[in-house]
Length: 118
Length: 114
Image (tube, chains in turn cyan, yellow):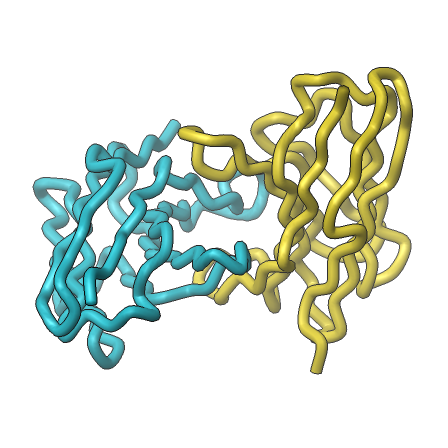
């Protein structure tokens, strides 16, 4: 079974600065998907960015980018030019590519709470 | 376009009571799922469905039932509520269950079982 670890429960960043959120995972599979989801105080989960494991190029979505290190099984999220609206809980998630079944589920980390100081 | 709609937003139950959490999506998504979110635990999959008439168990299915009679609706039934089922419940859907498709989440149901 896959596991996803987010070891930092909380982080804080100054507005306009850059912050990196860490995520590691454990799997025996060679191909899979990785995701970062954001959960603001409104509670609704929103996809931030996703990465296909077979692609070496790191995914980027505007101010959000990832540092994907497949050998190290690391998938960190970098938020540049942090804004007050970035304050939320962030979840790292893993999804297997092997068929539907139980492997079609997302395995989530425990989340990290990001606060943004004005 | 409403997306994924969950009702109710809040619910308080007594131990032993039953209830149904409603979930509906208007995006013609094949894949729908239910998660529960507990403090310090992340989200855990309860049940999922890859199409009308097809459901399967996730990671923590005990105490819950689901059915998928239409593409749009995926209700979650608590058979006999227990305090351990106090949690925030999320319904999520995606175009298919292949894994790459973005999951769309509802706004959650806060359930307390006394």
